[in-house]
Image 1 (cartoon, rainbow, N blue to C red):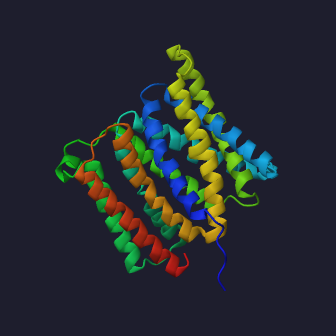
Image 2: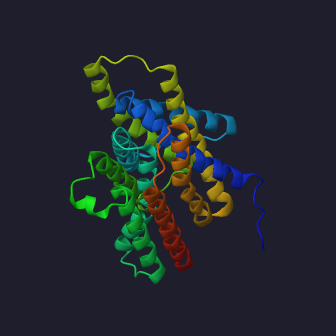
Image 3: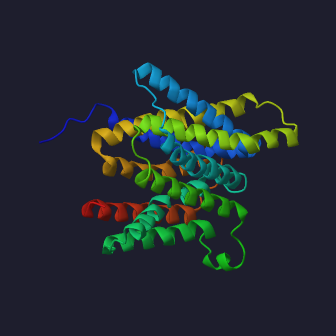
Length: 301
């Protein structure tokens, strides 16, 4: 029996991936204009306010974790909020937004590899093909299409920071999948963001003092508000609604649009050059993710 899909759910999914793609442009701007931990802390302060506003307007209640659950919340905050954003902003301070977006696109395949290893599962042929395609695509993106440069020290600290952010997100996803239980998605996200924001605020305080930094400009406040309200709070709500309506497998496929939007917006708003090597490598990454995830869905993994 077919299930009616709420009107506008696919449009919201596309807009969600557009907002996520835009976070690379906003993050690139902030990483070059203000201290990184300060920017990340303010971003999630806006996100917390946005989630509280959503809970109030929708009549939903944020439930606090039990005593035994705070350790999981702290670990989620330390990985997906603190470590990811530390690498995200540090990396965007040194590499282009489009390049970072294409590198981050490989995170679903890395997550799949970790899940397969943890579950001691056998690999399907399409999963292996998908992982190989994504790996080759990521290598092309990182090396600008010049594979020999990987052995000549052309990969800089910025790429390593972005890779660290990807690893942190994989860890966050695995904890979310295997350890985070007993809370609804809204409460879990709010509490993990709260823990991560507290962790970010500690080095942000030192940054503020050390640099005698001034208040953000109007443009910086706009970028921070965009990342916190649209790129985090609203996107979370819409994505959660989509998962509930059409299932995680179908909703996840839309995240392949994130690097596409990231590259397009980087070219339009930041004037970043569109390198054919990056486009080709990015397409291989996306194709690999789609191939591997479809194989996983077919196996029920």
